[in-house]
Structure formats: C-alpha cells, structure tokens
Length: 117
Image (tube, rainbow, N blue to C red; front, side, top):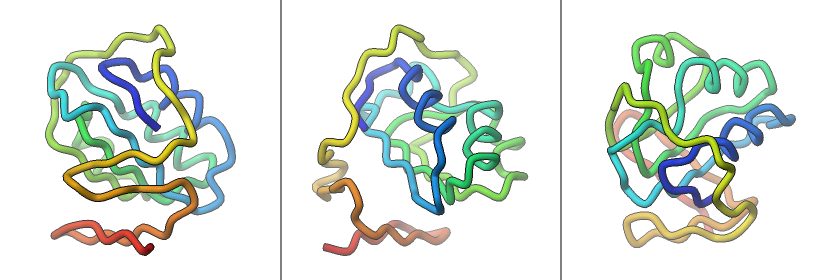
C-alpha cells in the first residue's frame, strides 16, 4: 500500500481479514503525521493481522507495544493524518531499496526486516 500522510486506506485494510499477513505501508518516509494509532492497530489485531511495516510514523506507541501485533515504523508523532482516502493498494512498493510485492513472505525481529523473493 502507498499513502502519504493519509491513513484512511490503512484503517480500511486493517478492518478486513488479515489471516496472519503483514501490512506494508509506504508513507514516503514522512514523519509529519501518524499513519497508525492504537485504534487502527487494535482493529488489525481483532481482524487477524500479524503485523505492520510502516515507512512513516505511528502514534500511541506504548499502547501499540502492548498489542499482539508486530509493528515497525520510522518513528512516532502524535499528530493525526488526513482521512481523504488518497493512496493505492495491491501494488509493489519500494522501501529503502527493498521491493515489497503483495503476497511476499516478510519476517521481522527487533533488529530488522527480511523479505523473501
């Protein structure tokens, strides 16, 4: 998924069945507003998502850290994002020179992320 400073698509996707998948969000590296907060993260857990990789910021990091959801993000910002629904779904995104394709296997731990080809 690609969205810039607008988390409406993130919210919509986390309300669908995740079936153990990891949501990859290319937020363009922006730290000006958060693409995920505790309510969206809780919805992801409720709907079976295993984690989220966000090339951007999150908010409510303490609350998110207490959930059974693995989350990697560039940083935090308490500012909420726009809600216009701008962005694209189900397209490959490149983050840090790594291509994430829909359906690819992603593994992560405290130190980093690995994408299988």
